[in-house]
Image 1: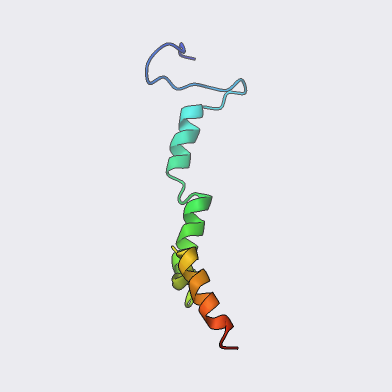
Image 2 (image 1 turned 90 degrees about the vertical axis):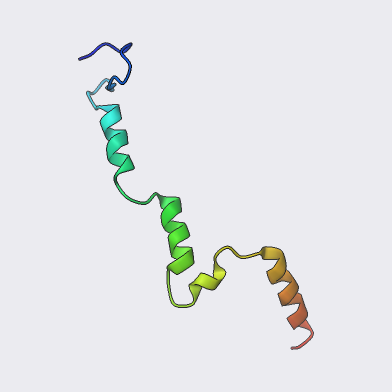
Length: 70
């Protein structure tokens, strides 16, 4: 095992797991949970893209304008 004070040194847990290797594998593993949620909100199904990046105040105003039309 290498000494811990060397720059760019891989570090290991007490059980021998190479922490830097795990980080490298995580970086290459695909979307994070939040990235996947964002992608689904924008393209997850037929007609769902209109719900992404929604201006909440604008929706409230539109909803209030419809309440008198029932």
